[in-house]
Length: 432
Image (cartoon, rainbow, N blue to C red; front, top):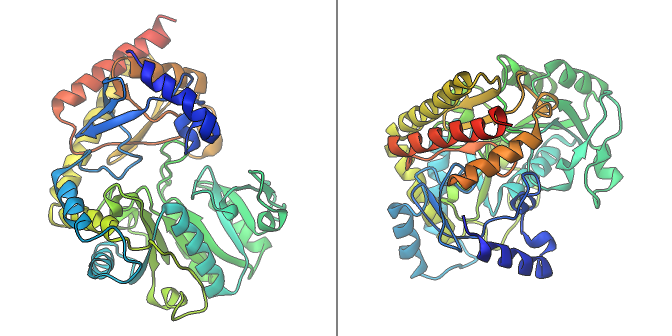
C-alpha cells in the first residue's frame, strides 16, 4: 500500500511533537515502520491520508463498540454543538448520565465525571487515601492505569521492597507508597498486605487486564481480592476504563459477579469523546469535594458534547441487550477461526479471549500474568502486524494491547480477517 503522505506527515510531526506522536504506542516502535495517519473512519473501516482502507480491530482502543461514526452518536453530537461547546456550569445531561451509570453499573451509587481514564484512576486513588487515611496502594504488574505518578512504578518481589520509579520524573517518595504484585497471585497480595498492615489504602486492578495483551483473572482471584479488602478495610478499585459497558452492560463486575468499592470508567461513556468517570459507594463518594475533604475539580468535566455522545451510546446499550450477544458471537467466530488456522498450519500459540476482546500471543505457554506475557515473541508479532497491515487489517501496534471488536463487523468482514490471518501466519512462520 502507498503511504507516502503518512510518511511525510510523520517526518513533519517529529519536528513539532515529541516522537512525532501524542501517545507513545502510536509511533509503531514495537512493530517497526512508520505510523499511518488516519483521515476518517466509518463502520469497521479506517481510511488513511493516502486513501487506503483498513478493516480495524482497535476501535479507538475500545469505545467504538457500535463501529465508527455511528449515526446515533453523530446526531447526538451535532444536536449538542448548536447549544455551544462548553459552559463550565452544571447541565441536565450530567445528571442524566450519572443516573444512567448508577442504574447500569452494579457497584456505583454516586459518580463524578472527569476528562480521561487517567484522571479517573488518579482521582480514585486520592479518594481511597482520603477515605481510609492511609498512604500505600497495591497495583499489579502489567496493569496500566494511565500515566499518573502512582501507577508508573515497578516494585521488587519482596513484600517490603521499596518501589522503583518506572519513568523519569516520578519521585522516590511516590514510589515508596506503591507496591506491586503479579497479576493472578493472591498469595503475593496477602504477603504485601501482611507486611504493610493497616497502611494499604487501595488495591487497584484491571479485573480483566488489557494492557499486557488480554489476560483473564483466574478463578478465585477477584473473589480473593474482595475478601482481603473487606477484611483489612482496604478500598478495592476496579479499573473498568476498557471493560466497562463492553463486556456486559455493567462491565466485568456484572459478568463475573464481584463488586468493587470504586469503579473507574472511560472511553465508551463518551461515545469516543474524551471523558472519564469514577464512582462507587455513597459513603466513599461523599468524601469528594464539595461535600467532603478530598479535592478534585475540572473545568471541562461533564462537557455537554461528551455527555451527549455518551448518553446516546449508553441508552442504546441499555435498551439493546442483543448487542452483547452479537459481540459474543463475533468474538467466538474470530477466535475459533484463528485457532483453526493455527491448527491447519501446525502452529502452537496462545489466544486469550473474553467477549469482544482477545489477544494472540506468540508463545505456547499459558498467559496468566505479565511474566508469562513477556514470553511472547515480540519480533514475530511485529512481522505478523506488518503482514496483516499489508493485507488491509489494522491491529493494535503492540503485542501488549488487547484487540477490541465492534458490532459493525459482518460475517463477510470476519472471513476477510480470517483469510488474512491464515496468509499472514503462513507467510511469516511457515515459509520463513
